[in-house]
Length: 118
Image (cartoon, rainbow, N blue to C red; front, side, top):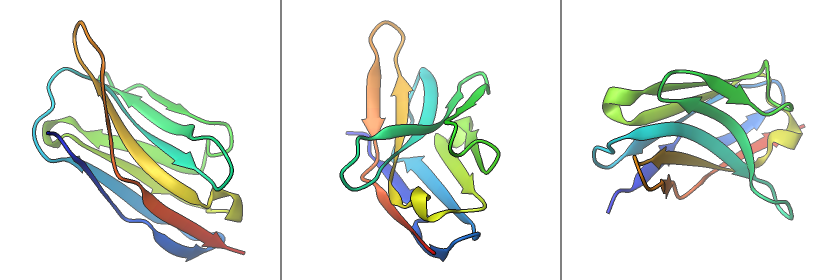
């Protein structure tokens, strides 16, 4: 069973930066997109950033201009560079890989905590 392993979370002061990484435990074929989601306490999980297999990117409004998503398709790895962090960015961050030709498969990481202090 494919597992996504995340790393890079932690505690940082407002204005600081963190880089999240997510690697698949084995090769995933027919990747459509890779992304990062986050879930704050008492809130629903929301999309943060997405990168398609063709390299197109999409960002949520709160993080646009501060976060950058990138990927290494050969390594089935996705990154999230987070700059200018704010207390409201505090959440558990999950990586996601969407794959499949006819059927869609979604793989999720276990989540990594990001805490931004004021």
